[in-house]
Amino acid sequence: MTLGIVGLSLVLLTGYSGQVSLCQFSFMGIGAFVIGQDRRGRLADRTGGRATVICAGVGALVALPTIRLRDLYLALATFAFADAMANGVFTDVHFYGSGGIPVGRIVIPGLSFAATAPSS
Image (tube, rainbow, N blue to C red; front, side, top):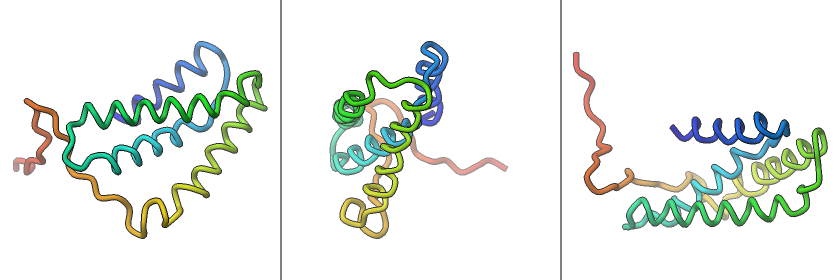
């Protein structure tokens, strides 16, 4: 489902405006990091809201210098941001440690996301 949402963001940008952005997965990684750091005993709607606000803020910071770019230059600028996030933040042991961030199952009142054994 998460990859589908990221794919839909590409449809909005590419289909309606004809532009190409290459940093959608960086925003997904930022949101996952915020949720991973913030999920300790909180409900999913609060952590999702915080991740959305932080990703929107980072997106606004990326949009400021790239707002007038088109075509290849927009693709290169967003690729540079994605590459900087991938090599500078997502692989840094100061942010994630050596083994990642353990995150439990999502908690939404009234819904169960518990894994069930496959039936034979």
